[in-house]
Amino acid sequence: MSPRSPSAPPCWSTGTAPAGGGPYATSRCASCTPPSTSPRRPPPPAVRGALLGAIARLANLTAWSSFDAGLYDEARPLFQLGLTAGRGHGDPGLLCHLATNAARQEIHLRHPDQALLLAEQVDGRLPAATRAMLAAVRAQAHALTGDERQAARHLLAAERTYERVTDPAAGPAWTQTITAAKVGSDTGFALYLLSATTGRLHPQVVADLRRAADADTTQARVRAMATARLATVLYRQGERTEADHHAAQATALAATVGSTRLTSALTDMHHAASAPAAW
Image (cartoon, rainbow, N blue to C red; front, side, top):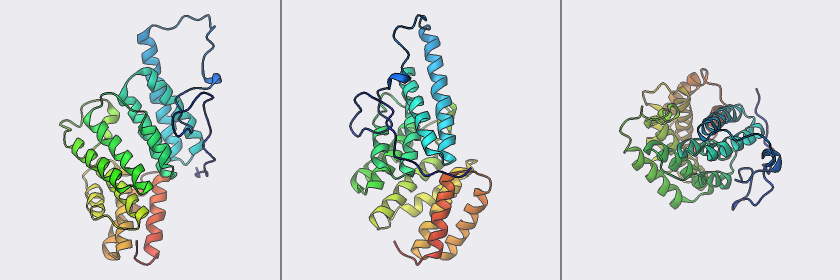
């Protein structure tokens, strides 16, 4: 399925939006709110919590699949539904998962202010791996604005927080995808964005991307993204022999993964391969 160019972010609420506005405002429109005069009795709290959790997880999965297929306008209201259900469910970890996934779409679409707005919706106690992921996504958004100080602050937070993870297999199933390779890929991408935005290659970007690309992981998408970005950086540095090696690896890995984001990374890689070495 071909990706579609996103339209202007829609407004999904009629109330007062938080600073920045946009499609992820916390208030809901009248059509999304059940009538207060409904004769139905509310479900017991345990049933309501389980239902909201199920809605949040299903909305997140469907929204992420839409985003990864390039259906950005379809993904946004699904993310919004998930965020609304996640807030009602009350699990800050699940809400963080939804907010960071929605933020990744906004970063992909080069909307850093929207990504930061989403990250600000997360509060409460979070496991170390989840806090590391949130910090890495914040770093990417700040990198996209060219704010080196804030990007560096959140990158350091991501790395130091992940060092506290003692059992990656503990917690909900989705937290088990926050591996060392995933965090390395995320921090490497933040440095990649910062380098591209400022026009100066960050000295740590190659090391972070190489660590993620060489990780022994079953996460083919993570390795493919990191490897494609590593090849892109090496081409821009003029290191063509090593870049060609990683480009071949990225292309092989991409054959097993369908992803618009990965396609975009491969396009950047091929463009760098055919352009003069420069930042």
